[in-house]
Length: 235
Image 1 (cartoon, one colour):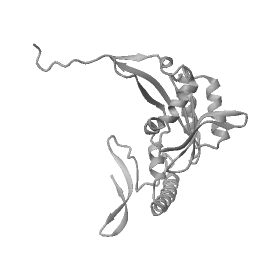
Image 2 (cartoon, helix red, strand yellow):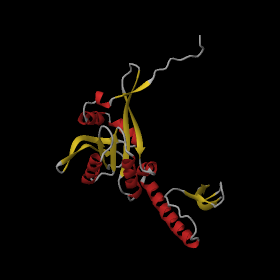
Image 3 (cartoon, helix red, strand yellow):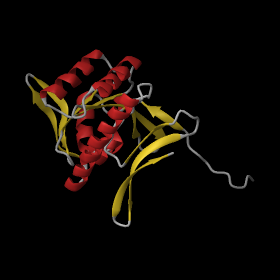
Image 4 (cartoon, one colour):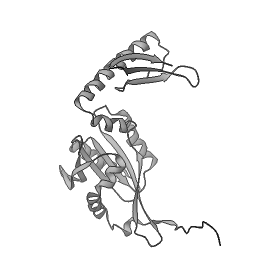
């Protein structure tokens, strides 16, 4: 007898086409189970519809981000990503003036991951956020098959964008004031110290950068104490 022994099942892959025979059926399932995708991406989806018209074409799924009201486009496909579906995603995002584009596939090629990353890195602050999500279906023993989603591409500062979208009006004003302050401070410090590696200003209450010594950094920050605020430089 082995004390503490536990019988564990083995997880196996399930052919996605044995669950949904075609992409339309998969889109129908996604519409009814959109909360799973929304949770992976970190948004709240609302007003989701199927085959939304974009000129003579139609987007697989179209909806709104509940917090911001921004348009969301979802393009999905079986198999490995291809140029056809990439083109569709960009067409639908443009046609719907969407702020979030989600591409779901079984496998993303390195080239298509790089394309979405390039778009995310080069969009402006009020541009489009692109996500690449791989889907697999798994099963343990005789259990019900379960979809598994893996976000393989997302914007670098997506969490920051989400948090800013839920700010109150007063918080947004403070954020804007701090962003303006740090932008001017970064530009002036860069002018005085041309060899300094310029950092990207943010609207947070602090901004840090390397001190040129291993393990050390400088932090410009706002501190509050006894009802008053002050600006400090910390090492």
